[in-house]
Length: 221
Image (tube, rainbow, N blue to C red; front, side, top):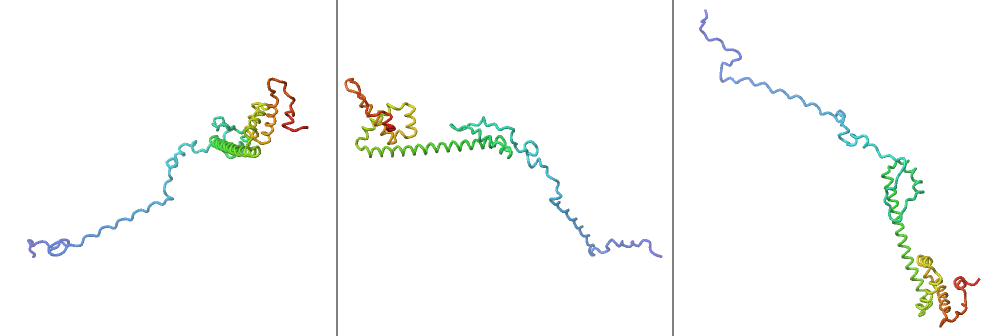
């Protein structure tokens, strides 16, 4: 008969010997793979209003349109330049066909007006330079022909000019340079001589002029 006071048998899970090593710990679980990054095609669409501010205002995105009628009265044109109405009538259909706005059309007209002003300024400068050279050449020609008598003959010619020409004619001669042309100066010189001869001494009756003024200027018929 067995002794009931005997020690119970050890459990299989409990080591009977402290020197016996413990069972190895269980391995850590393998982490789950990360989900793949979404492709650009799968990304949600971007709000166009956040990218283009004009998309928030449909009117701001609309291009400017050509007006029913262009108005250039507010343009400040250069001095001496006027709008060419015939040219505007010709280009207006082209402006409308291209859809050019009033603002852009005004810029084109303004640029054209400034170009015209620049061309006119250069033309006047070139004419003045030509005039100065031409008058100098005319004077040199007369000085060579008249020699020492140039200054005296010129005074007589000016006297003849004063007898024949009014203010308008003098301005024309000055503006064109013809007043210094040798042929004109010689003609006025002949008239000046006649004027001098027509002044009698001591108030006596003037002698009959040798030649008529028209004959001096234009020759006998």
